[in-house]
Amino acid sequence: MTPLPLTRYRGLAYRAHDPRWAFAPTSGAGAAIHGGRFNPKGMAALYLALTIEGMFAEVSHGFAHRFPPLTVVTYDVDCADILDLTTEAGRAATGTDLTILGCAWMLERAEGRTPPSWTLAQRLIAAGAAGVLVPSFATGATEGMRNLVLWRWGGEQQRVVPWDEEGRLG
Image (cartoon, rainbow, N blue to C red; front, top):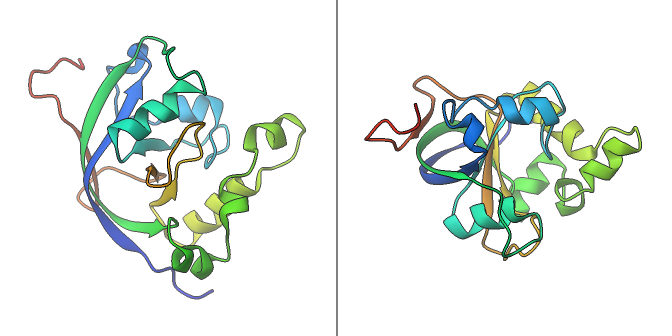
């Protein structure tokens, strides 16, 4: 396999947590419990939006004015080994497309099939990717809304630090 065009992401990211997870804002355990677009059940992942508006699109589940109680966290991110799948070049380098990225993963899972986005994630992880930049597929997402999905984080090469100067997250 040709080496992946991995890059580094540095910047802010945002996540709206269930308040019951405020004590562990970088755990990825919630995603492991339920699975997600880019991680099967049992695999930890950290899903971060790159804009505040994108974060709210992700958590609204199509109900623009109805949100469950949330804890909003800003993160300082500096992660190596990231694959940018928001560009045609990034998708072409991995043999993927928007159909795979935006697949109806919950329906696939409910019908007993492995979602193509899970197969892609497992292939990219095996090739050394720590995470991906992807377009948002949330209802109401605009073209510029992007997410950072991490499968490996922590330490010097994949730094994800919640901004919590007052220690409110526990």
